[in-house]
Image 1: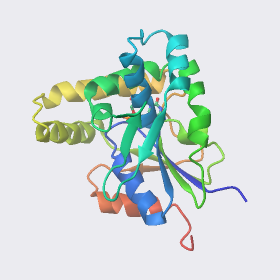
Image 2: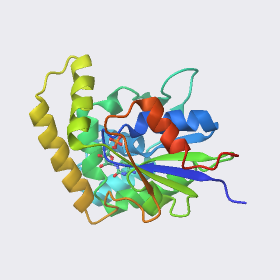
Image 3: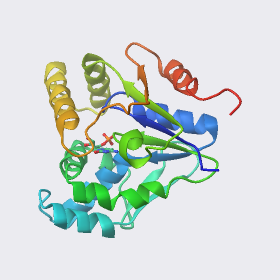
Length: 223
Ligand code: C5P
């Protein structure tokens, strides 16, 4: 009997993180935030002063980087990178850009496969990312592709940044998001696209609790 996996893939700003965590909580399953792994490696590579376009060097760094998730009561788990608390750092725009740059190297992606497979533990796993259903867990029992219109994702991001005191224009954000979507969907390695057997859930204009219900509805009730 293989350990069940629910994959939730989709573009940034689709609400994947929040939804996946809530779904994992409801099921009492483990949660893999694969984006955090790419962000952590991006940071570690930057700390070492590596050239992020040097695929071999960054892949080596990925293999050496110690990444731990520590859950302490409520809220998001702390992310410890090489012994340093990087919980806040990995969420910065700089770390996001570094993650996106290093994630384009096949060698880096390969270096993170075993680590990701290690999250598959009983009673089950909710895996959140871009290629969870297509590359990392192709045998997952359930696959969801979570989307939202580019406008809605830009608005959500705008709100988040405003709360953090960062001022950017909505139009600028929309352009950035459209450009990143294009880059992620057209890259040759692990492009962002729904797995053939994925259920597409569009969260545009839908409150979080309702999206959570729609994702849970993909699983059989008796689970
Ligand atoms: O999901 P998050 O925004 O944290 O991901 C950061 C970056 O890591 C993404 O922009 C994407 O380029 C990369 N990523 C990836 N494959 C994954 C998860 C994230 O390429 N499974």
